[in-house]
Amino acid sequence: MKPLFQLRYRNHVNGWLLVLPAVFMISLFTHYPIGSNLFHSLFSMGTVTRPEVFIGLENYSYLLDDEIFWKVLTNNLIYSMCTVPFSIAIALGMALLINRNIKGRSLVRMAFFTPTVLPMIAVANIWLFFYTPEYGLFDQIFGIFGGDSHNWLGNPDTSLFCLIVMVIWKESGFFMVFYLAALQQLSPELKEAGLMEGSGRWYYFRRVTFPLLMPTTLFVTVNAVVNSFKLVDHLVIMTKGGPDNASSLLLYYIYENAFSFWDTSYAATLTVVLVLILAIITIIQFVVVEKRIHYQ
Image 1 (cartoon, rainbow, N blue to C red):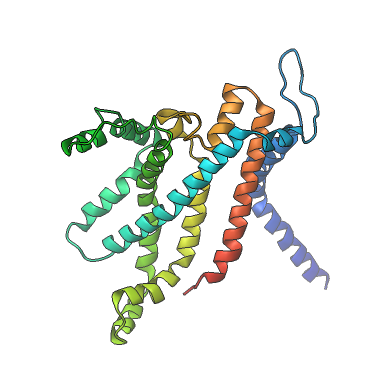
Image 2 (image 1 turned 30 degrees about the vertical axis):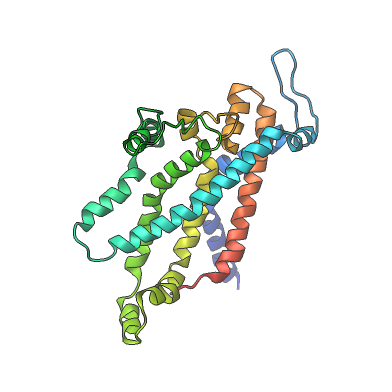
């Protein structure tokens, strides 16, 4: 009994020693920053002459009355509800297209994936040229058909949707790779059986292909949602949240408070809210979507 107990104890210790580096790194770069932000959100903004003091939940009370916060949160929800489903749908469509035996498939695949490898700063500058009034690509095209010049990024009604279109173009190719890999893992016998049963292409996709792609869809959805709350590079280059916060997102508002207004305490409060939103969305995805997943 004693050697058996020693063997189990040794295996237990060895297991913890193996995962200890990963636990340390996750705690250092994930759990500690979250705890630190939660701690600093309970203090006032400190200056050189006036150190920060404990104020409890006053920052959270101020946040509830902050009109700009609700504005950028609404923008972010619209941004997420547009970029996530459209990016996933386009990615799936592109993967289905290049998974078929078509002419120039390698060239088409490269064209679809090219936006993914471009840095967001470069993409923002490219699309900034597209949206430039009078000289931009879109105004040049509309001018051919007699259309008027339009200040796409300077109009509160269009600035956010201009960013949405750019992000969909940028991210669809990245998600396409995961769908393409998943499609190539599907057994060809399933398609042969479907053809023998007389199922149409749409029926086979709806009843067989898409249910088997649900694990990939869950993975892609989680990444797309996180990306929709963490991207800020394009805002710095294209609109800086304007005009009148019409295109500002939650992470950019955090950036403004921390590095433009130097109100790190309120920025920490906003960060806690952002982490909480992402945690709730992720839990819902894994609880609700996980039940509809079909594994091979």
